[in-house]
Amino acid sequence: MRKVCLGLFLGVFGLWLNSAQAQFQEWTADPLPAVQIKTVAFKGWVPVRTEPLRGTLILVPGKLGDGRGLAADPKWQELATSVGFALLACQFTDGDGSLYQFDATNDVAKSITAAVTHLGQLSTHPELEKAPLALWGHSAGSNIAAKQTNFAPMRVIAMAGSKGSWGPGPETPPGKEEIPMLFIMGGKDKPEWIAGSTPNIEAGQKRRAPWTIALQKNEAHDAAPGLPLVRAFLKASIEQRFTAPKNTANTAAVSIFKTTPRPMGGTPKPGATMVKLERIDQKQGWLGDPETYEIAPAVSYKGNKSKAQWLPDEATAKAWQDYLRL
Image (cartoon, rainbow, N blue to C red; front, top):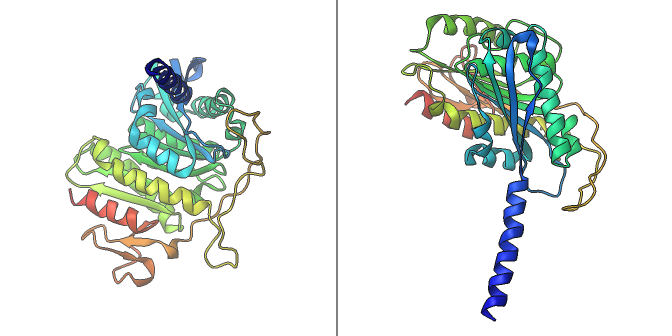
């Protein structure tokens, strides 16, 4: 009897282990000679679910970094699971540290897009090929994430950058200013990076783009302290762009797919078609005072709204406030 129980336990454990391991996919892609990057590699993670995945969260490390380990980070996995996204963590190493950030030929952006499609094929989630993209990057990775919003603005659902050097950049392709973006800066970081980022962000804010600045006056270039704010911002922004505006009769969540759920282990359904994402309704969000860090719902905010920072919801507003008060 004991042997039978042990055998049953080992069998169940083996199935669980295989399932857990199957969530990760890792591969090396082609080099990018146009931007002088010799090593390009990716690691993906897919949450266990029977429904189609809603999108992919892309994580890009700092200059010439290997960020593949981020795919195994429980906090990133928790965020991805909560919004029904896959994770894709990137490595761009062995090469020129400047060319690939500017990405004048869109080679990095194309490589990331191709990697999302490849992850969908490996994980039997072909819907990822056309599903929305959310992005976070640190330093050079923030600049790469911003470039992705130029390359595929209609597909990017949200973006956050930590300590980048030019914010969203000066380009304004159609759809880019509908993307909610968060830019975390450190008051003790390089002054030229703050000076290079702020005007581009503020120019978009004046045009009513849902872009947010979080300037932590006591920080330099570290990314870790701001990650709780990053995750809160991305979660709220993703969910709001999947939800019909509250001032319409239809208040139900919008499904981005025309496919039906696939059974676990079954044959994958055909890839989904891309659909238009909702615009952010900033009047339904919160506002924060960049000097006092006081926060309030946008409808009841008493401060100077022209100088306030937009925040998608209360949880993000509190995370913004906590971060700036560190």
